[in-house]
Amino acid sequence: MTYHISVQPSGHSFDIEENEYILDAALRQGIAFPYGCRSGSCGTCLGNVITGEIEYPEGLPLTVMEHEHEQGKAAFCVSVAKSDLTLEIKEVSSSTEIEIKTLPARVASLRKLSDDVMEVTLKLPEAERLAFKAGQYIEIILRDKSRRAFSIANSPSNDEVLELHLRHIEGGKFTEHVFNEMKEKAILRFEGPFGSFHIRENSNRPIILVAGGTGFAPIKAMLEQLIEEEDTRPIHLYWGVRTKSDLYRNDLAEKWAFQHKHISYTPVLSEVKDDDKEWHGRRGFVHIAVIEDFTDLSGFDIYMAGPPIMIETAKDSFTKQQLPAEQLFTDSFEFSNN
Image (cartoon, rainbow, N blue to C red; front, side, top):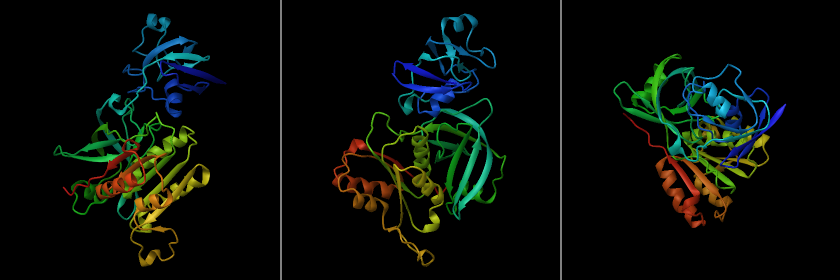
């Protein structure tokens, strides 16, 4: 059984499966409901049921009194639809409306994606969730109170864990610890989410995603979200690295392009080594590959994440290709050696 849900005042709508939590269905389809604990105890996702019937499989949550339930007040994180619904809730329209939290997290897994890139998966506490937009980042808080910023590499629909891609910085205190000492089940503290790097929902223009090195992390999150939302506008992914071995999730990028006709993928190597002599793909700087493929960028939205020099150089080049400044969104990766 599938029900249809309309949302006021945004005018958005989505479908929900039988026994699926309303919040889960909304987030799965890119509808930005506010939320926090996802257990019915914080009240962040409270709204009103204008028409239709809902049910709480685990019983009425602490944040909703019986008389409030009868009046239509609802916690959407723990309620399911029993009919078509019209709901009233203020959706999150920008990253500034998302609550910034300081939370502990347990290291669920450590996986080397290449010689110098580690995938770190963090498991949040059972009673906590982190609302974020694909493209945002968190800051790991070290024992000396210093911080290290890392982009979230998974889409917001999977909010029980946070996936990070960490590049090993020679002499870097935190990344040296991650690569040489950190064990699974270790506890970290972080604050977030931060940043305004996220897909703009008020545009239907084709998208060009440009990643440099581990700038692939937020780009990955964005692309996963777009796929989940069944966004079918043309999406062009470019990933620039030095050598072939630096394409640490090339398999995933190729899979996206193979499975979705509207997605294209172009890897670009700037330093082709002897080991890469069989490389028949693009060479040079990644932003050059973009301007070679698109002489007029005025009809695109471009999202770029990577080293500052890549971002700054690309800005000038893209401007010469008629890209309006307001259609370029960037996330510049600064690496700390401390």
